[in-house]
Image: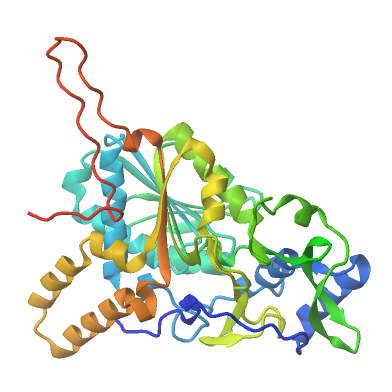
Length: 428
């Protein structure tokens, strides 16, 4: 284990918006050209360009993760995190009756640390999985990150597709012989029973920002500062937009709202796939349940960074609105959470796991690292209550056992297994 500075933007911190700031030349020229041609940009389009532009986008870089990058995530802090997620995946596979095929699908896999830890649990619990056919499917838009993931999961046993238009742009195989495939879009992942993981994925998806005015809801956009043409500013557009007319609920009580329409579409896709093919989704991110307002902020070098400064050089993020995800999921699936990371990990047995590791560790430095990483993951003032877990499940997963009718002595259907993490596991 290595003790690393945790992803500092896990904190619920409201970043004050500066109306103008300096920007890097290449991305700034691109953005100002678009603004001059079409007018102010929706914040969602600004985020999309800054983060995923194929030439100068932030995620084109390969050094945004880790101690030398701009943020770090729970799987990099301690392997215990990924191990418990692996146990959750197997628990949900068992809860679904142990299908013969299991697709592990991760959205935004980072360096591949979480998938690697989950697969190690699969290997250790092979006797539980039996003859199930396991395959790994990674949804990743960054070619640079896909190379890091491939090295982590398959070492040299991978290759890029010959045809750039192939929906599977990279294929590989783990040391245990499990096939690994890379996609740029969720819809290209094959149908079938799947467990979906999304850890710190939804926070980076583009958001629209809206402000309540005397004339109704208006969209906040990014424009060129007329007094400083090499700088950007936020503006509230005077007229309604398609987004401001369609994305806000009629009973909304907040005065400022952020809506991640792209996240809503992905949740609808997950909901449909789980409803039709079975499976579950586990979403872990920092966010709120429909209570927060202005959470859009930037991070660079583990420090808060003005969202309009040097676009393309820093991570942009916004808290996940879990109430919106729940609404977008619809009635086709059951939703659990959000609950705090502290509660989820404790329900998963992190305390028991820590006791075992500490008993087996005699090296003082290793014990110190274990304790520090545990504190980082569970301390309410660190990651413990800033990150939340949210799950989508097939309705049959929570179905009550059928009662025998009349005098027939029929065997009752077994009660469903408790959903790990959202209820406390007991160890005997």
